Length: 604
Image (tube, rainbow, N blue to C red; front, side, top):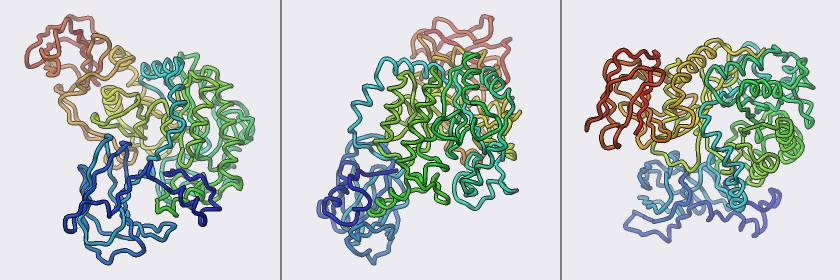
């Protein structure tokens, strides 16, 4: 990701003073000069303002040589302490030496901060720079973006999105035929660094473009795949479906006029799979969205603009992450040319071909620049302002946030937009034939309930195989979730975050696909554990265990206001209850409930 604003071309990078001026980072970096510090012996301190609450790297800049003092130095910044030795991480275009600390710093709010460093080293400057995952834009398009984002059409679309709560993600494409195995080797055994999820097959084995294209010649799914998947989403209680219309491999599941590398022109299927699923979903009463990898295209997007970005970043002493870029067999065009000839036109094709499209889920933004990301957002808005756009369009131009792949944010995390978590039913997004580590129904429901209690949406993924069949373990888990949701839907659709999120359980954060794969799931639940949602004057207390005779919901004590009525969703029986200083006492004797839990509805 680009962390700077460079108006000059790469070719003029080395020479003129005007180029050097374009490296001024004061708008996005915090630069603390040694000469401006308050000095007390070998302790230096500064006060400064943080304008963007994101993750930063801390660097120490040396004039022309690294201090010979290799002792561990101590740096304090906000609530963080870093104790590391200096090392030569980079050199700038001025031949200054940059030592970057390995530990990153995350500021959760804007405002004044203090930094101190204790060292005898002869440094020049402390640089606090946005981590490569958090580029900061110039703000030049903010007002125009905000006007679109706040338009009546967009706000109505966001109201639908917040109401929906639960969606189906589908990762499906040429890679699905391989099932995570290439020439007899499992993707997890590939020596190439990078994600080992099945849809990254081409990257994991660095398969040449022409060789990978051969998969299209045998991609001929079952004609009933669309109806089967739409029906499954409906049974699962999902309200919207999002499918990979084009993943990083560059292959389009729709009939594209901008490329022959698509379902109609390159496969024996000879039909538009996206249009078929779109129509099947609408017939089931489901809303429809498409995933589109705009920044990464391993077939036509050259190196994803990596070389250009890296050349400038290297000159500044900034890390450039190569993840997701085709560095083994890049196409001969430029990344900008790919955008003009394929990415923008295909987004236009999808919107015009799917008039009731609800959502575009961009991905692989990587090295898309600020202008390109804004153009994608505006292109969508101009063609259909009723379409919601996710965060990964880039540069904070999305309508809503995503917490990350299989990530659930902390209840304390300050989020400035509505949000969604996307998750998997095993440990891969695309079909991986040997991954049988399926999440139990209770585990999936726990993630869903936890996300709802924090006020977000859950986009839960399936990975059909090459013929479009959903693995039975995955499908069964979704159907069981659907049965529970059907009974308890009043607590779900249209609900929002209550003032208290949960009681009984300590917060357990899901830190990503690899986190769950490595550590599994060992949580247990009791009758003392509840998660809350609210709608109107009602509060819903959600339990993940079967109903027991008597329960006490402490968060619904007298302090929350007078309770008018109490019932259990899905039951017609009147129940005995009493509100006290200790909580809401409920007698559930004789109440039948699912093995996966129940919901108490409370009217205040």
